[in-house]
Length: 167
Image (tube, rainbow, N blue to C red):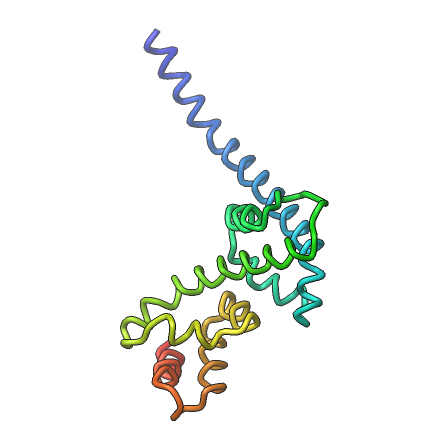
């Protein structure tokens, strides 16, 4: 009996790798379907704000399927639903934006704290395009913010320039 148990354990361990690969593939398919759904739902809001889908794609690369599902839930939607309004599209956009801001916050916070700055110093200056850029290229975001504010106008600027030099 103990030999059968040992063999079953070995078989289960050997089978775990393919099962995990299958689970990963299914999750990737679900995430792809969720992003395609987002493209349809958010088109009106993106046009309203004079944004392109490519702007949103930069941010979505960094969000998980769970982030997308939570944002949809906040907007009162279920991923995949075809029953949405301009208001729910706007709410979904805002919820996704908040998730992106949270991700960017996590990536920048240690360096900002090291420099004696707060997240509010950066967050108050962010546009949606800045957020999307920052999700894929923090150096470019920091350079953009530094350029926009001018070196002598804000204590954040010297920190941003220093960050770029140190990277």
